[in-house]
Image (tube, rainbow, N blue to C red; front, side, top):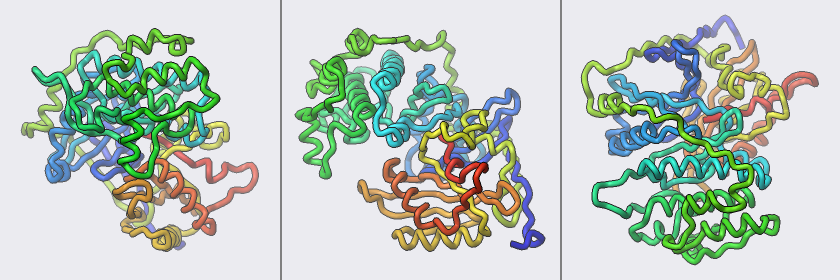
Length: 453
């Protein structure tokens, strides 16, 4: 590569008091970027959505509800929402930066969790959901993919996009939503349902999954799946203790009227082992003025946005952006095999020219049945999901981390996490010729694996 022909300068971006770095997540309707609060030095994640996309897809009410709920239900085991900002064309949601990955990824990597570890996560989940319910909020899409882990291994509930708030004079919810494998029978059957009982069922499925390594209800066709869920046809593996079996059977009761409630779960002998309740801090005054300002289009409420970007070639990754490759601020995760979480964002290193890297990726993508769209050393691959109806997509971006050394960052944009893990493994097998294998004593390329949101 002729270095004289390529000019690379650092990309700088300021969003009010936030210095914005690289993309750490991407979906159909939003991007998530790592950022730093320049006033406090705190790391945050900023979810960015185009107003045009929100209006086109009629998502304004849903997003406004999600933001309001996250402000209302503040708890140590929930992802914290700090504030909402807007520019003339975009909405910015400033969130707690969670560094430990999805609980789902931990299950994929380990197969299943030991009973004591599963109990700790379940205790934290129940404490978080109990806090939601006492605020009149029902999550309605609880699953391991929506449960994150922080740098200390504590659970954080995320994604309140399908949550419901109580309506005056309305006791039962009626919208069928969520992920079928984790949904309660009364939700799937289209009956009016109690949001609290439905969330508890989902918690029971999560407990089964993290201890078993597989779903209690799993069928290839929806009618069979619905039938099994409605009849609660499942069996616990032999390694489940008698105590946890009894708790799961009481949670996965198809009758919501006799299903165990949160207070009963907290009194159960299995749940109470080493139980240290996680309580919310003293009540803070919740101010929704920024939410109203963003969605009501009040003039003068826009945040100052300053972007400078001049380059020909892949972006240089500076020290600030390298923070996003670490577990919090501990950069040893890049080089220590003991930091072995496998997460939905993955990466490898190459010494080939960026144009060669992109060409190889496009060729492999085509052979795998994907459409490739490339711009500025960033490629989006799109295809159909092999697991369920809908789109599967990934985003691949090339960064320069040292002279003639490039990091290829791969992240899921649409589809199931399990499908993504399988895709990434197959992709790396087909790109073996461009992946750099370090010499002994150097960090291995597969250790540039992940950060999370």
